[in-house]
Length: 318
Image: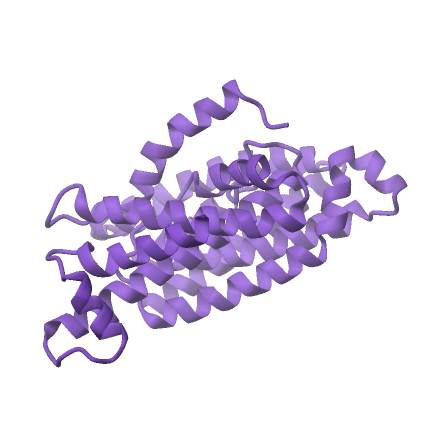
């Protein structure tokens, strides 16, 4: 079902995404290598196809990371940004943009910022003599995330940079997608999925609580570190390329548990397809709601995700 929905949405991206529509028959001919040498081929291959695939991979990464965080924190309302990762990545990326770096610099700044924020969460938890339980990490991460969000605003104001450019990036925008971003994010997503599937059984054991998991021989400290570090790296890369896109991880993980069950080995793959579908649909709306104006996809996911959050609060996950 979800795979078919993804394929349909990719086709719609190639046909009606952007400023002017391209007949679906012409899109098919271009994909089969039988198109002409006109503008249509360039639009399909260099503009719309990389963007659609980036949406697909980006949505899958956010969803898979969200599903793992929800299992790790035993909280159905958790998402990839729950430990301050996105705020750290955004602060690093904002600083790089203000300093006038190219895309590579923004990507590096976001990655370093996300990983540094995670390291700081663990350091603060240790320095404050908190235990390394997921609850402690969660509380420290939320506090640190609020501080880092303010730091991003400070960088933006003090830098005197074009605020429109930075804000469009912060709110999530995939209009600058290229084949390079597709390749790098695909590698990051594959690494994330491999690691999480490797630790799926211990993560499933955490549903019994940390004490119950320890009795089954699960080393909860190293498990948390591996899951958080791998997810942080992947999510930081997505922020570096396309900014902050919320709610996809939250909604996808929740839907996957209801449809595929609580076993992470099944729900991970299901959440990946759900996340990809949701982000493809949201980005298509971002392009078509106001023809001629490319809205931030992060704003669309927030508008659509908020009602889903209210629905989840009313109907707790089993």
